[in-house]
Length: 256
Image 1 (tube, rainbow, N blue to C red):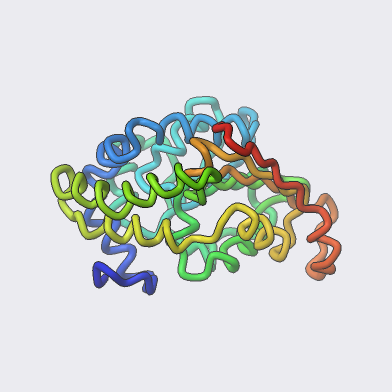
Image 2: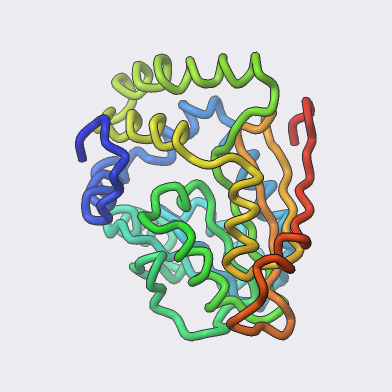
């Protein structure tokens, strides 16, 4: 992938993640200044799943995000399109079910999961709206979706400082700690190009999800969106009706 390119060819993105897989989790901890673990704990709490339930963890990478569910007795399926990431995860946690799959064409039957989640991966999907529809398809009626994704800081000064970090400091740090620093240039550019909190909420509504809320973390650097599949899901639901059901939770100057 060209270092300045945001055209997400799935094979190129997968290769990029294959390259960074061995040190992926360590580098993320460094670049996020340790915040990644806190953000992931908040996602697990938002999922609110119980032992014995079946959960789809999409774009699970090395399975770091899947581990808390497995440890709690949840039947978690870690799905990702990077074979390199999945191999690293399977070596570390052979007890977790790792499956290779495309987010826009998931290899699961309808209504397979009690809940679904994706953390910091929707941004890398070539057709994110289609991925939201696919997650709706494989989630059981009444089931929950939780998304954690980089977003737009809500305080102008904080937004400016964060943008400077993304475009200047992050690539410089990545050259010291990553075997493929260009992957983190892509990371910075993809974050800047990603829609804000309200746009993602609208995409969820357009895909058919309801009861949509979001919570800003770290001043809006990350947003956690929650949604629910209608208890009696129909393929055709008026979009105008769904739009009225969006209930964004804004925290203003406060972080989650």
